[in-house]
Structures are given as C-alpha cells and as structure tokens.
Amino acid sequence: MRISNLQSLPMTTFSEENSYNKNNPYSSQLLVNRMLTEGSDKETRHFELSLKDSGLSYEPGDSLGVLPHNCPKVVEDLIEATGFTGSEEIEIAEEAICLKDALTFRFACTVLSKIQIKKFNELAQSSALDDLLKIENKEALIEYMWGRELIDLFKEYPQGELSVEDFVGLLRPMPPRLYSIASSLSAHPEEVHLTVAVVRYDTHGRKRKGVCSSYLAERVGDSIPCYFHPNKNFKLPDDTEKPIIMVGPGTGIAPFRAFIEERKATGSTGGNWLFFGDRSQKTDYLYGNEWEIYQKDGLLNRLDLAWSRDQDRKVYVQHKMLEKGAELWEWLDDGALFYVCGDASRMAKDVDQALRAIAQEQGSMSEEDSAIWVKSLQKEKRYLKDVY
Image 1 (cartoon, rainbow, N blue to C red):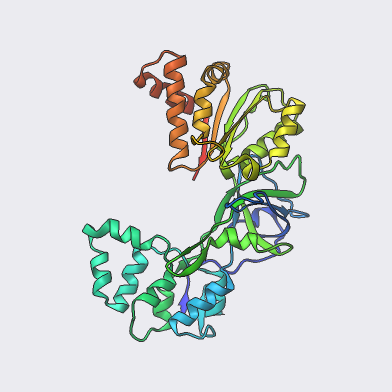
Image 2: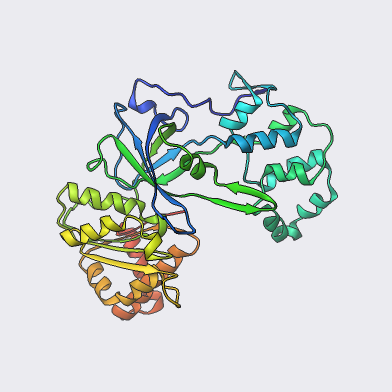
C-alpha cells in the first residue's frame, strides 16, 4: 500500500540549521527527566534536552515541537485487536515500512475523532454507531469519544474482514506536540527545558496515557525528535526597563521561568511580578526554590501564590489579582506588559474577567469601557497570551 502525503521517518543528522523543522526534526538527547510534584496526585516533570553542536537557537516565549513515538504496548494491543501481525508492508512517501513501525512512528493511534468513527462504520455497518453519528446525538457522541481510543472501536463493534488498506485509511498522521519553553538560552547554553504535565488515567477498563507526555516521562538519555516553533506574539519587551506581570498557573509557569532567566542574564532593570497557582504549596510549587531565590535577590519584585486545596475556599490566580487590584493597576498605568500562559478554556477567561473588574474598580470604568481598555492593551501588545 502506498501513502504519499505523510511525513517521512524522523531523520537524525542535518548539515544546516534551517533544515530542522517538523518534517526534518533535530534529534536531541534527553539529559534530565525530573519529577517536580513529589507526593502530589499530579505528575509534572522537568525535562532538559541537549542542543550541543546543533547550531540551533530560540528566544524566551518560543515553543518546542516534539514528535513522539507511540507506546509499544499501545501499538501491540491495537495490532492484536485488528487481527494483523504487524509485519504487513505498506508504502509511505515511496518508502516501504511494516505496519508495526508505521503505527509506532507515523500514525496517531489514540484520540478518536468523528471522522474516524464514520470511516470505521463504513466497514462495521453498526446501527448503534449510525445513531451515535446523527446530528441530534452530538452530545452523546462527544461523551462516547471522551476517554476512548481507536482500539475501543475494534473491541466494542465487530466488523467484517479488514484489509490493511482499510485499516490504515482510518489513521491520521502523528501530529507534533508544542510545549512552551521553560528556559533561557542565555542561562543554559546548548540546552532547552520543558515543564510537562504527564497524562495518565483509567477509562472503560483500560489504562490510558498521553502520547507525548508519557513518551518523554518514560525516557532519559534517548534521542527525541524535535524542532523550534517561534512565537513572535509572546516576547519580552525590547525595552528592558519595562515592568512585566506574569500569570502562569500549573505548567503555564514554563515561559515565565524563561523570562526571568533572560531578564537576569541581560541585566534588565524592569520590575517583575509573578502570579502562580496550583493545588498545594507542599507538593505542587513548581520551581518554588527558584522563585524564592529570585525574590530574595530582588529580581522578582512581587510573588503572589494561589493554592486551590490548601484551605476550605478554593483560591486561584484571578482571586490573587483581584486582591492586589490597586497595585496591579498602578503597574499597568506605569506601562507594564501583562502576560498569561496556560489553560484557555477557563483560567485565561477568568483572568481576563479579573483584569476588566480591576479596570472598573481602580479606573472607575464602566463594563463597556473596561472591555475597550483591555482591547487597547492587546492592540498595543501589552496584553499577551500563550494559551492552549
């Protein structure tokens, strides 16, 4: 079988820096894999990857793209569920490759999509799936897909004889994962650091795990295919005297570690204010020792921490912002840049609402005027987001 529109297997050596990209990733050695949340029910890890002799560079605010491999057990279980051996040969971009290797390196084998279910049901002809795919059953379909993977379709719905071509037709290329970089090249020459929440959970009678987060978590010393993804819209100000306010709960802290390292390395004199939050200070204070040192040394002028489970009332970063509304307004009035990194679905919206509330209270603005003011900050590139 020939498939011509997929990327080739990751290569490992290149002669020019510009050749490193998602189609031709750099092969970086994973130097450090360290748990940051000992004793927590969350698994968050710090990774350090080598850029030695690569000639590659990045700026604080950029992301690292990682091209993961599927877990061998996931691949084995899927092959078994489909009835293949894994030795079947297919052709991708004029290159012959066995099915097992294609599933390991080339294809996404886990997260389900509606399109996949539709294609699968063209083979299975299941009346139950027909009903699930109806427009009026949209919510039921979303609920079904949550926590399920492609293997679940094969286990839950019998299908007739399946050709390897039909099976591969259900798959999509393995997408890269982008992670906000947690280091400054000025502070860590020839290295790039990441802060990653590792996803592991049980659903529908099977143990599941995030493809890329577990790929990194279960390795050290291995070669990791990766590339840099610039983010021109999430940068430190050119004027090193400008104050900055950083809001980054959970792994949203990553780029702000890079920002502070860069501000220290370049001797920036602008004020630095960090809002960080997570579940518990005892187990989830990511890079806590570093923040305390920076604060003691005067580099970090303000540090506000929000712990959702250390008291009866849940406290989040937006609550801390509202508590410090007067001071925050002063910083913004003095020209500070405001940065947010992390969860887009709830946290970023709550932070945005808190910013508007502060403008209404401290700036005596109407709700409408506060919305206009927030938009003006964005237009002036003083309100910058890296949310996902």
